[in-house]
Amino acid sequence: MKTLVKTTLSAALLSLLITLAPNSFAADYYDESYQDREADMIADLVLARPLGVVGSAVGGALHFVGLLFSVPGENFDESAEVLVEAPLNYTFNRPLGHFPEDEDR
Image (cartoon, rainbow, N blue to C red; front, side):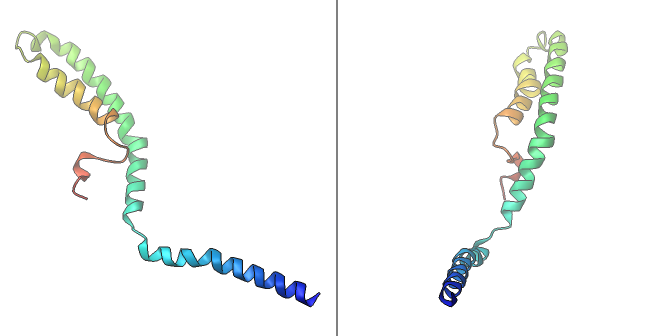
C-alpha cells in the first residue's frame, strides 16, 4: 500500500512539474503588444466596423444627392471615391484590428 501511495504521489508531482515548467519559460517571451492587438480587434469589431457600414450608407446617400452637382462639375469619380469607395474599403478591405494610423507600431 505504501508503494502505491508513493508511486501515485511521484506521478502526480512529475505531471505537475512537466505541466508548469513550460509556462515559467513562456513568461520570458511574453509580449504585451498582444494585449493591445486584442483590444484593437475588439474595438474594431464592436465600434469601427458598424460605424463604417453606417458611414458607407450615408456616403452613398450623399453621393446620390450630390449627382446633381458632381455630374455637371465633371468630378463624379472623385465624389464616388471619397463618399463611397473610401468608407467601403475601410470597412471591408482591411484586416481586423488594423487601423491605418497604427502602421508605425
